[in-house]
View: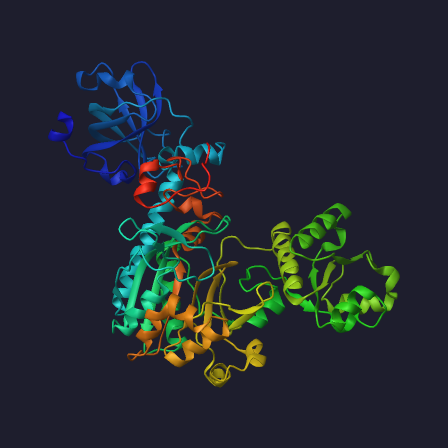
Length: 595
């Protein structure tokens, strides 16, 4: 490695421009491609900042290795930056106006033929995950990780400027169930006991407020043993924020400023004042508490228009207090029967029992329920749904949650299919006034909609303290979600800061005094020593960067992600461990896992 002792890298490959012409530079990187023209060898040299064309003369004693170079070899070169000959420029790359005439070349590392070409879009995801270190060489993934770094740096600088202090909290902690399953870690020293990897630093950041830190943040690693989706992973990062002596508007103001800074500095997008909408309004209008506002389609309540005509499906749902909602679609009058069948299947995936349709084509209104309604009644229903000439309307009748879920799924599908969404813009929304509690019919008890440390509206505090269970469905939380383009990117709440209120909340959730003491005794006691009013929020880093990069899978913005089955194909994890390791931990498997 004498080359590295005598010459140090002066520039990244992708940084060279016209202004560098005439300068002598030293570059180091990977051979991206090679073109051997006999007398001269042209190499595209790649590093994380891009590629640049270098030219080697194999007859030169310092560059005689030119003929040996192959794809993904790691090389170091020294030479003169020159302007490319007229007509030979490459406008597709930033370095396309220049090339480097190499006077010295050294092979730092040879490479076997890789299983795929870097950044080949046709390569299967399974193969790319198995050789993730090769996939990471692609400009696409490197660009995503650089975007992630930039976003996190902006967060750190912004919050530090707002008086926040970055504090690290433990990874090995107590199991405090918050909705998903914990990842458990057995203790060798205290056999029979377990740590849990944190699902979030929720109680810890509240304890920091009790400890007087006042304003805290952390880029926190979190772990949840749950079924995966495209925008979920078993381990992820969040921007964790907590503030003392505040109310809801204070937290939202700080984070709205953070959103404006991130989008302006990373993608050049100006975030305007972010509108607010209550949970019930977004559900009624969009069927989802994280609606994509780029999509103009809205839901309409048609219960009054459809009831009383003798159609049992609609009448029964209205009678039991369910929801009958419609989604009007412009230009839907030409939808084929096969496409309507596809929409029906999507609605059924979300629990709907069926899908009623109405179509207007060439002045004629037709419907899947025409025989149950007069032409006048159908026309009224279509008008109530917001139907227009040449359009269509789809109706779902069921319990409120099922109706909303089904029509939200159709809304997303039709927004994409009809190209109603501007992919180049961002639409933000604060969703507020969530239900504090929701009834868990399976376990026959109340559950926290956000988490058990969330404060109710001030005017409803007496309901909590009096344990008035009949009023529980009416309780609203001081909770708020920040939504962008159909994704929840941040969520938080004002916390309970009084011991008596927290005890009432645990009782409402069906926890006995013994259970409360076992799971949260340390936290309840901490509240008794003088706790400031406080609240916070957590941003999903991976989901945030996914939006900034314009991709739809968080695996694309994580260096080493897991598969949908929570496995690491590259390292072959999880894996079987030696019996001796298990015995040290006091663990005996009920059955041997065979590979």
